[in-house]
Length: 207
Image 1 (cartoon, rainbow, N blue to C red):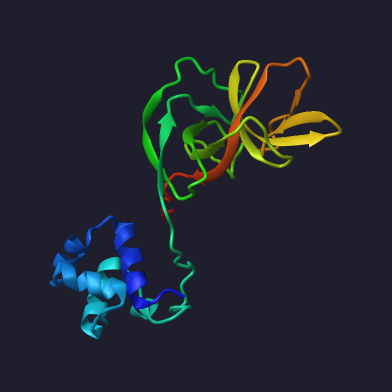
Image 2 (cartoon, rainbow, N blue to C red):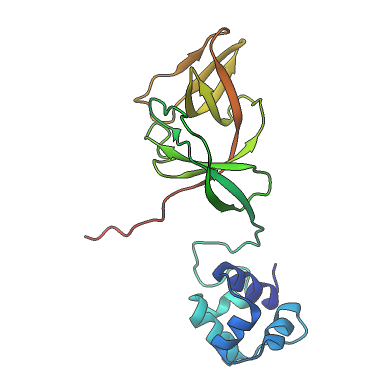
């Protein structure tokens, strides 16, 4: 269980704020925020109310393992920045990797990833929908059941890697797409195993 100070720090980092910036929000100094987060000082109820309002959490979040009737659990996370490559990963019939280069950086929760690519197509829906970003651990091999980023016959795919009786199949999540059978002489390269998927932000359905 995180204590009050650890929870304040977690919420602050989620917002991308410095201690000084958070202090200005609730009218206290940076040293006071530091004392709260380190456990050297305990915020008053008034301060906790201000923090709860700002972070949009119930005030009992700071006191309980199971605050209110929340449908989410707050966990402490660490972040890693990895390169995002221009080549889209096809979750359909393939996307040819013409000019692959780094177009930016994205932040992953897992430390065990090396690069990221964006999904194009719907064959891995709903697990990896069109437009989602895949965070990939670079490695030339995979285990049965892994989701992989690979090149097959000159096209880049994201598929489930299935190996049975020395036969390799690339399976889609969407049953509309037929399996790809990888023959021994086929041009097939595993670029890495997907460790994390970042989907599009959710949208509210208005009725």
